[in-house]
Amino acid sequence: MENFGQLIGIRRSMRKFTEQELTQEEVVALLRSALISPSSKGAHPWEFVVVDDKNLLNQLAHCKERGAELIENAPLVIVVLADPLQSDVWVEDASVATTMMLLQAEDLGLGACWVQIRNRTMADGKPAEEMVRMILHIPERFRVLSIVAVGHKGMERKPFNEDRLLWEKVHINSFDGDEE
Image 1 (cartoon, rainbow, N blue to C red):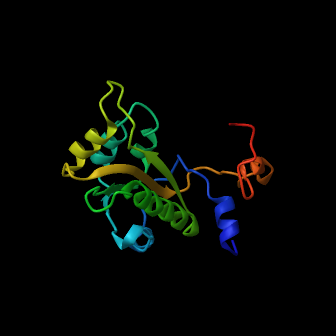
Image 2: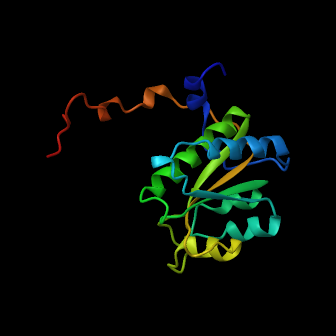
């Protein structure tokens, strides 16, 4: 990989990981990327919980009805939280931090996947966020946006197919679509 364009072209969600643990340097690089991410008015409303305990990973893998199963076999996850009292755009700020970690993981040759928690539910209809908060003892004032599962790639993914770019969704100077 020679540049950012190549990085974003090859970054794909990775849902299978090897059992190899991450090094301390890799974990620090992931967290550094999140901590230097921009935030509105420099508020930095986010916080991060790093989880590598197998029992906790197993519990987190059942925090929502579907889509979190991959957490169980990830060697590490980073839970992305934010304090809405610090910023009214905490969702955006925490999303940028999450994206930075996903890109950093790919740059390190690791695989990663964003697991959406905010506005998701468990099978019984309870918010997934409540389950994550309970498992990790997260104070009520924090909102849980996402969980980033990270590890060494356990499968091959082809780069993004540029032929699938939806250029028709790009509008110049005004919306020229068929909707009113």
